[in-house]
Length: 276
Length: 291
Image (cartoon, rainbow over the protein chains, first blue to last red):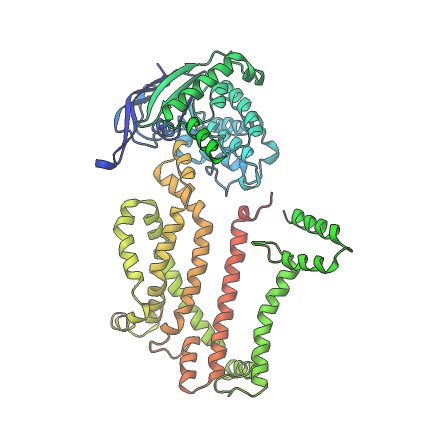
């Protein structure tokens, strides 16, 4: 049984002449424990697909299943990490990580030993994400990278089976992002959760993903899928391997083709000549 | 950040020091005019004091020269004197007390209703559709014009004064509360949902705590508006209160008392405003935390 399964998923915004098909006939199966990345030109519906799997968007056709049961709304087994602004500024780092414990779903039928386990888990996550030093700080006192570490720790707190990530490192600088890549690979392998990861950065998609799914816009659809020919334990050196680079150029080329946005080099050269 | 601004300033000063002192001074003076620039605490408060003292000095000078008739412009000393006699002979504290009561009662009553209503409008589109256009319509109706209706419906007792202040603040407050609630970032709400929060948990554990600082600011601002409706409210068969005292002083052409009343309302308003700001700092330390 696959962790996530989309069967002919459609999503339509608006009606009449304003009707936009954001997702059209999406078929996608993701195995238990698999790390799949979604890339594509802007407006291809990759975020919409992720949000549909999360249950934050309602699909207008087809079926989305998670762990075998249809997705009807957001659920604690599918935690999501957003690009930013999702932390609670009035809670400390520790307060944010422990936030799920305040919720009824996670307190029902709880014994005292469960409470102990959960408390230990918060400490373990704090340690795992390298946040011990800032446990009592407020999110506003942290850098963007540290804030995203908190957001990931909070998402993992309740042991979700599926982790959905919507460009979580999109607002970070390149150096921080590299650190976060190794961290997230390590943490997800440790937790054994299935990951669906949306990004517009092709390099990030290849480095993190076992599989890269490329989406195309107008209407939003799955264009092609690429199996990443790299061993599961990724290292930074692999980014310079020929397999990595050739896959990268293939994907970048394909995104350019599907986006419908091509720079007319000939025209630019002619204009430059005339200007001279 | 302040340190870097300071050090870059001193560095700039250092390079040109002794070479072109005149130019150097000019640069220093323009650095105060940097857009959204920065001032030392000392300069800030010195300027604030100047802003308060200069008008007072002008006022004193104008009256001391005797060029203006005292009926039009009483001197600060006249006003202070009037305040003193008001305090000793005319129950100033009683007037302040009853006015504060009316303002706070009207404001608290509207807060009591506006907070839950605004929360619902800002959270559920269905309530917004039902109530927001109506509120938008009513808030443009002049509160003053409701006086005859209030007298008809509520009577001329304390209730009437509180009702006028309520009408003046409630409708604005509802819309501001709704806007504060709508400003809660969607990512905060959706994160809670994907962590398993129910609808009521999202409201209780995310929307309310997230909008609290903005709500306190809204309460502070509407408190100011409640004070502006005081004089109007005390037009209705009042025989006490600061607004009433101003209106009565008008009949007897006691300009100094009018001045005293206006200044008192201003001072009380300022004090309440500062109290709210202090409360804000105490209640939301995370907004003032330094990295």
